[in-house]
Length: 415
Image (cartoon, helix red, strand yellow):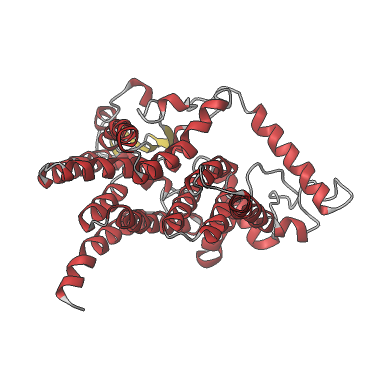
């Protein structure tokens, strides 16, 4: 390997190594299911053994999210056993892989090793990304597949991008929100003809639909699935099942301690506590142990300004890079404002996070083109890093004195 190539690969290798190490460290702790792992990890174990979600009594169980993300969790269970490490490890791997993916996307958008490494570093230093990479929930997979879809669009591999957005939809339905923006991003509205629209429909509607249906193969093949025999054939039964899922989501309006309106997501108004204990004999009068799903504050708050500047750059220049970033933000964020009566949580914003980072990189690129010193960007990353380390105990559940925990509750709504 040449020295030049080594210099190119060394920084991203170190960043990915750091990200993976931190996502795997103490991954088996805390013990037991935390937050919604009680659903997804159990569903995943059932999928691995029976091909369909069953309850602990072996009876069919109604579930409200498609199977693919739980199949991914199940791979870890198959490899490492039905334990905490087993049901969390694939999320850690996928979360770490997304650090490389944002690096590759920035390379394509900006042709800058410097900015690519900055983007990867910001990914590795975000609290929400870390937390979601260490729990057996679906959202890190959703984020990864949406981001991979956008990467494939940059490569002009639209058929494969349709497959991947189908995998995202087979993880959580909210991926469907992104599809209209993918079509708009890949069509020249003024010059598109009927054939172009037909091709995009095939790539971003029919292909994802086919992938989505394939993700239900276990339920289709099995005779044990919930509502499996509710219709005259498996298509009508699957339709009945989906009607019930839709009814569930429409009716999910009850109050929840950690419910967070989409307006509050970017400002970190109400983060989600996945785990909280007050350990005894901890070396202080009282201690706290928490896993709080919250982004690194300085990174997210700076991201708000970066999004606003990116909007301004798009209005002024109509550039494709800003359009790409704003399409991602629109597809992962704006639709939630149309269903504000539904109970929602801040950690859903992990799907928006890659495009917040891309907005920051877009601003950094603009600054560099206007002769702003790189040292300011390094200073921002270092500040984010210090902020990340300060909050690290409440990202991964390390015992700290209660007074130290309280000092990290910068807003009353974080408690």
